[in-house]
Image (cartoon, rainbow, N blue to C red):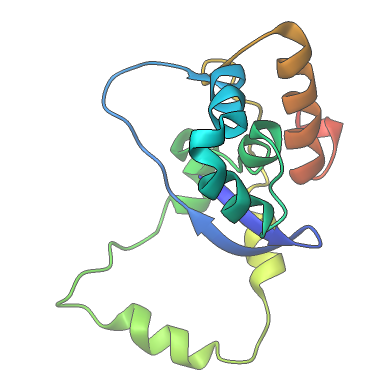
Amino acid sequence: MFANTINGQGYDLVLFGQLGGGKINVDAVQARLADPANAAVAKSLQEVGINSAIDLFGTYAGRRSDMKAWLSDAQINTDGNLKLQYLAGLGLNLYQSDAIYKSMIRDSKYPDDLFEGTPETLMSLRAKIASSLGGPQSF
């Protein structure tokens, strides 16, 4: 899960999955962002404050195993169950996204098996993720 936060507060989440293993090479993604052929993608990311691959992957918020306790009694939302739509209406203008987000990431930790790159890149990424998760105590 990756988070789009505003001033460190939870706002939007992106769920990303892959079949099988494989690490994300942060340096290779940075090279692709720097490639003039991908200028439109880089510009689009810059418009939302993402200026590098470290900024992009620094939005890491956790994985299913980190959120096991938070998801323990979660119900699956389906078209036949309109509970989520009903509850969303009850939450209108409550602005509790920050508290919900902090609760979700409470047990998140740096994913040692997800990213690869130079030691300097990984050290910078680790610091960026630690900052977004609320500080180095998460790591």
